[in-house]
Length: 162
Image 1 (cartoon, helix red, strand yellow):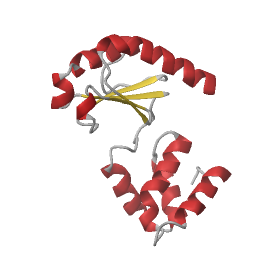
Image 2 (tube, rainbow, N blue to C red; image 1 turned 120 degrees about the vertical axis):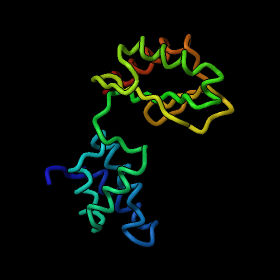
Image 3 (cartoon, rainbow, N blue to C red; image 1 turned 90 degrees about the horizontal axis):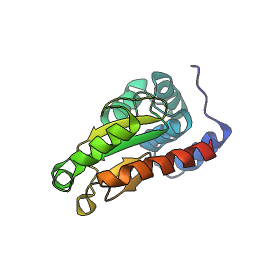
Image 4 (cartoon, rainbow, N blue to C red; image 1 turned 60 degrees about the vertical axis):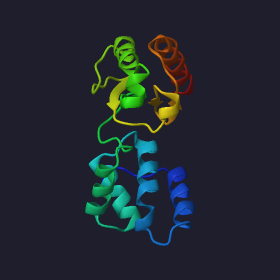
């Protein structure tokens, strides 16, 4: 296994395990910690989580592949998810998605160093549509005209924090 959790991640996992009745029950949050540290959930990350929790790799793999919140491939610095379900579509998400495609220079489903752009089925924010999730934060409502300034601001913030 080529990956190792950082000391900080190990501390977070130890504290987390105190809150669960079994190690297996902590699979989701430990996968989340792995994704935060490594940027995505690779097969090496699955093996590391399984070893850390002393559970079968097949269990961790099943959880990681079932939930869409886990990235199974590397993502750009800004992971942009645009909801195009009915409420968002009726409020203009098609235009919002097109604006992201234009600003980011890629189509939905593509990734480069700075961006991963995805069209998603539902972000559960119908009341403030169109909804967009960028990394771990929701932005709502996001109209096409909002996209260039939003992307520029977030890119600047991520470069400052790097």
